[in-house]
Image (tube, one colour):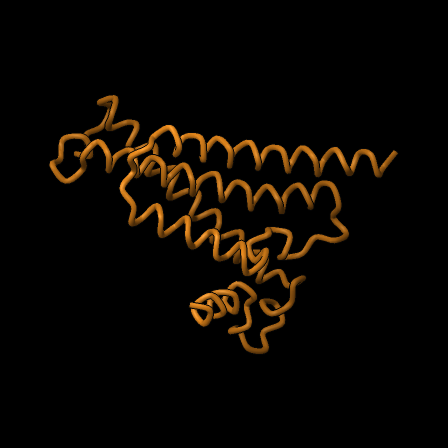
Length: 170
């Protein structure tokens, strides 16, 4: 398992890019733009999936999600939970970069996205992904609480970063 996590960490640290300075350096624009592109693509895809689920539920479009025998109510709720998790996670990482860019642009690098925070963070995200993909959602209130806590944590961190910069500027 440790070898698997180490391989993921090497990818997140862009060690596999060889000698291309735009991707191997923390300050390289190639790395910054690639991370932004990946996060934005994931965010956009999940927002579109969530919109399709909602529009299908209210009858504006007929994707067949609510009419299908394959998509039970539990599966639809799990899909909503997963898309919200991915949306909030991408917003968190993009907000980290933009708040740093706004409040402290002199230290802005690719690591400002906090995508490769630590090995423990990578393990926690992988556990959450596998939990979301392979578990059966029985406790809807716990899932909603988790999403709410993720959103509050993201907002709180952005608020504190902005607040600390305003204190340092005084």
